[in-house]
Image 1: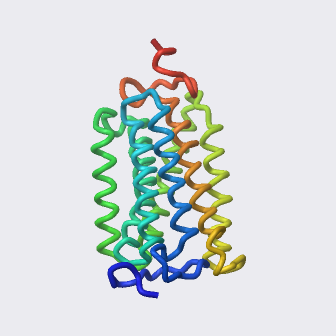
Image 2: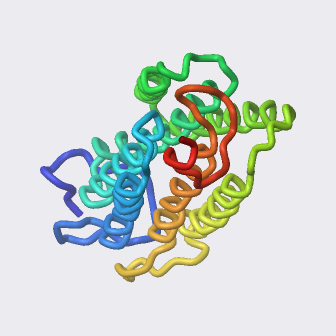
Length: 234
């Protein structure tokens, strides 16, 4: 199948067969919009207007880049799709760095953008499957930072974090069955394992936002109850 604009085709492989229509992989493309839906929902309901805005913004960008990748099936948008994974890992690293007082909370957006630029630069420089390894290393760093924070016994509510972890592990198991074609129906353009991976991971953004919502990442490092609004604090 010829990808959009006659550009070089993507190099990855998923179960869903390519089509000759405007969407190369309909199920995988449309399901990516779940990230956009979560991003818009978070933005419309959140009462904070601070660094937490990075969550809905990142979720929306992940959805757009993933949609363009699966819709076009081009290597050009494949790079952006892999970069979207780094949006999440860099976001979590920057928030944890603020919680550890390694960076000024007021500079958190700048730190996030700087980490993302460096990660994408490494991705473009190393090429190949470097995106998976860079993402893995950054997630490992997030876990290590969280372990240090957990040992401080600050009264953190880890329920949203554990929910995000459970959803991610379930999504990753489904992703493996799709990419290795363990459970595969190539011509089913309504339901695909990779599409389920998209939808489940979109909810990870929601749970992670709820987790980081309990910290005042702008004025102080004290924890506040999950779901408490600015009006309640006032």
